[in-house]
Image: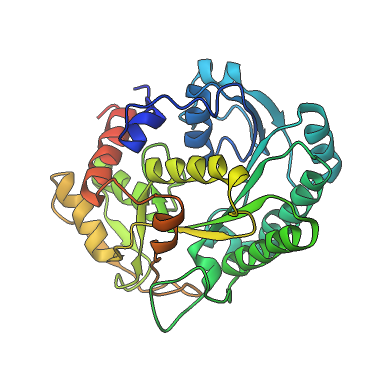
Length: 339
């Protein structure tokens, strides 16, 4: 089944033409990843000229179809390759950069911290340094995470909270955030930071993540293994809402004082792992079949984000209810697997 990304007008709930992105040259690092592919597909639908950089290209597991890929200027490479980044920016002169390339899962970063720090921290400073040489840039949007805040006694997280990650993934995001701030404060680079909750939706082929793994378990009728106690809480946000947030932020940056700031994008409605898994089983019309392993370590137990700032400054808020998003996600995977 071919997945069709809704138009920006549909994502925003408005029937208004958006000409800002028409013919805009946009660099997306990590364009074939989960969020990157959704964002890239949306940019293409809006008429943007997308330069896609990824360490893995032309993947079989992507929502980008042949027609999409034919429109993208595809570059295979790492964001840790500074000379490559300089060449890309000098040649294509993008007006907007979305920096999504990263080691994106807690588990992979825990197992391979050097790789995580290289990709997430070194890759960030090298990209921003390359961007600093490009006066044509109007906005750089850096993908961070709620995990950059680390463990807090009082929730929700606010953008003014200190960054105090403790474990490899969390620390890599804390550091990348601070580096972005440095490039704004010192060099006036038009960069902003997005800290998201747990993103879910169609097209996530990383089955180490909870939602796609739980959905797959319901489809193939195997027990779902919960690594934690099941009581950890997270803020789950549908991918379409995040894409809309990224585009809104980048579009508003040139004519506002948003550069140098961080923005939380989340649903603001934390839910425990057990309740989320049970919701997936219920929406799949299957009896719950999971096992609690209580083996998770070096993970933050409770997280969720305040979105007051983005509502006030960007007019953004999550619009896809959890059950609606989960239904769409479940249906997509069922159709993808031919079930």
